[in-house]
Length: 250
Image 1 (cartoon, rainbow, N blue to C red):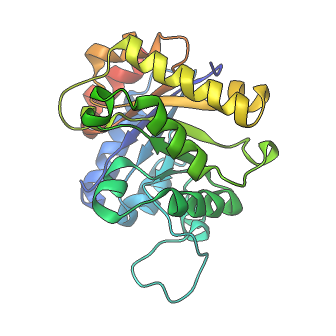
Image 2: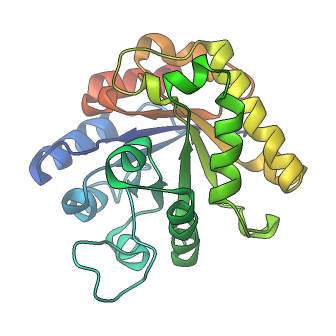
Image 3: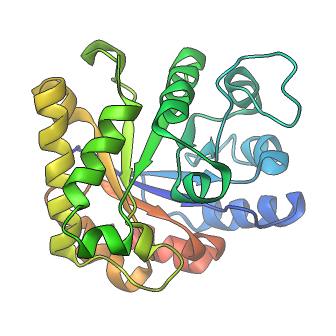
């Protein structure tokens, strides 16, 4: 387990620029801890304004996605260099909603990982199984497939900035949450896979976050698990009070 917990908020397709700045300000002003890495991921239009508004605070800002080319005729896309220039330190890669609605594959996840690292942005690779896959006993097989596909061709020395997020698809936006034991088991499997594929240094240094209906009421129990290095929060990150409650519970 990493020495420093991360609490990350994915704001998804919510908030105008003004609303995002206001939410970021509430979080920064209410933050009472400096021993937790706090990250917010606003929409692209709000990313730079939010980053500027948080420049004097310790709150980090990340993107929700990026394209794998740095520039070119790719209408509607956002590149790694653009995210970096806007103030992003992190970026989500292959969130389950990107997989479900926008055709994200292991190949495109790998390309996005390469682009993020090339731009000097820390990628948070998201993996997780559906309810059907869990009930079929396929959880570890799905995680192995997603990890091996997205990290194909990488060497251990390239992954110092990598983070992972285990987000069981059946627990995202449903109100269902993996039990503490289920979360820890999945994280332990992922860490063991990293060690077998790369080395112990990568396995021990890679922070693995849990994402899936995280709330103030369940955050402490999840984060207390030995293999859980923090949480990736969806809906509860849209309220400063609930997000700060999660941070306080970490």
